[in-house]
Image 1 (cartoon, one colour):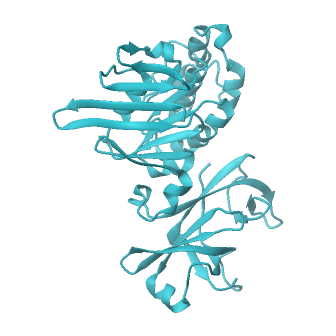
Image 2 (cartoon, helix red, strand yellow):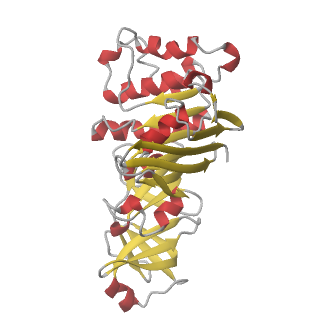
Image 3 (cartoon, rainbow, N blue to C red):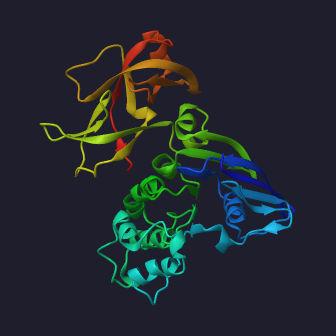
Length: 356
């Protein structure tokens, strides 16, 4: 564990933040919970924007706050991106990107303007005024500016909440790949399950100023009572790569053990991608079926059968590559088919969403 945070903060008479948290310093960690649960307050303490007497923060063995010791924001080398991009309107895209870069000592520079612009897909926009950018482009520039300060930690506070749905879909892939490509751990504040499923490696579930539990994404998606399912229902997220196109025009997705055929308007870029599959879009059969419109039929081994809601059962199955896939079936179907843990069945996947 490389980021350790302890906070005892009475924010107002009706609300206090009580957190004792230890996280690894890699990948994307989502702080997830309803608005007002304390996510942003915790982020501000980590960043050094709030100096709280009852707080302790350390990162990779360096104490940022302990007792009277307090390292200010600029010395923590933390990159911040908020809901609003906060770009400087009198500068071009290039000018905004170079703002933090020029103020970073050469010995600390880990990223450079050309590589960051290419990574974020804004290399063709460098001379454009920021008032001529779309919302998604502005957020990418804001991320680029933060990265060019060569931060050792990137903090994102609801970075997509001010964007429309199409722009959110456009920019989510950049955030999801950012931690690996830039080698900078990310803490992401969000209350949107879609963003967690698309971008996070692990989830810190928060409510009423406290941490309820910490799980990696697959654990969070494996339990029926996950808060991620409250609004849209149970779902699975499968990781794989784009394997090319089939002879009949479908995009092939997966790995050497599991493959799905996707019908997409255009072939996505190569690299690791994620599929979100809603549990109510998965049916179960004892054998593969022909003379049916469902193309993707994958063998799974039943790992769990749990009561989901009245008359419904959440079946969790393990695919050939070890990933888990959930199916929402009726209690009558479970009884009629006499389904049991350990048995092999086929998952019939009616619909998928490529989320990055």
